Length: 44
Image (tube, rainbow, N blue to C red; front, side, top):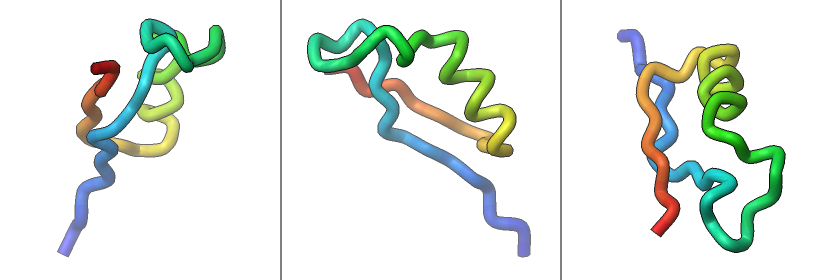
C-alpha cells in the first residue's frame, strides 16, 4: 500500500508571526523535494 505524503498545515510569509524564509515558491519547492503529494496553506 502506497501512503501519500501530505501536509495540510503550512504557514507562509503572509502570516504576522512568519519570517521571510517562508515564501510560497520556496515552500512549494521544498514540499516537492520531500515528495509531498498534497499541501494546504493555513495563514488564518
